[in-house]
Length: 382
Image 1: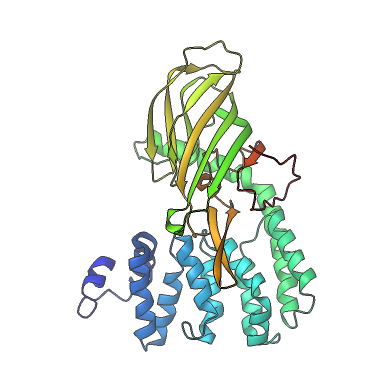
Image 2: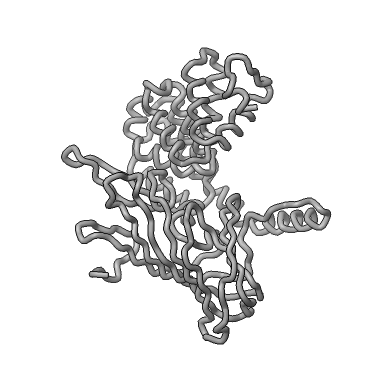
């Protein structure tokens, strides 16, 4: 329907009862062209209900660079009406790909937001409540507390802030009390439906192996003249424990090319072990390696991979940003791994319950500086 509407917007009509669903699905699946088309509908329509419907649907995009663009538009009164700004940001926060971006944007632009709308405005209270209603982790709670510490005078937004903290604490308790029970129930339901012949795709990695240690080397190549040519190069050794005999290993990748995957027994008792075939499941962002023989339960192995990929300004994984210095663009490489974007920086087991230790080497030119949230072990010529 959405494609038909794009092809003939003057005469093709979508059932009003279906518009919200069609708009959201079209934007989510259609990429930049679909997003730009719907944004133009917002700019041209004079129907208030249609404007509201379109603004909400524009937040359905899966592309982080479009989410970033939309956030920027939200406070640009030449793009988005001031009365629509808070609704845009709240809608973005309800997109799993935009939740953290929306929060970071509000925090980074709080002075502008509070001065434009006033600390006593209803919009401020709605904004605080709207962008935090899905907060449910200790990290989310610490973000809230840091925000109040840096902005002690929230005006009438103080009550909304207190409610956000209370709601987050309740959500954390609910997750602690119920997550494992709910997860087990869903697993049982999915298993029973599979036995009944209904195909359900498991988006989680197999639990046949678990990572213990990543030894990661990353080179963000931001030295080309044109940022379109920026790339990521790297290699990683992942120490894995085999929990169940298996002849394949599945990891996450997104927009990466794997060059040479190898698997070795840490004890050396499977010298003939080789990767004989690989395949990718793009929908689930899986990279699956099939082996010449089964890994043995209770044994430890080292999975080694060389990889490369594009370095983009899409605010996901390992990406580039820029600023002006004396009229010239200065580029830097930045990481954003939450919630599922580590896989865009390096091949990994990108799930919360598959945590491991890391030893990271970052390659750069001597003129560049590296900053990390962990202590630096050493620096020098590689």
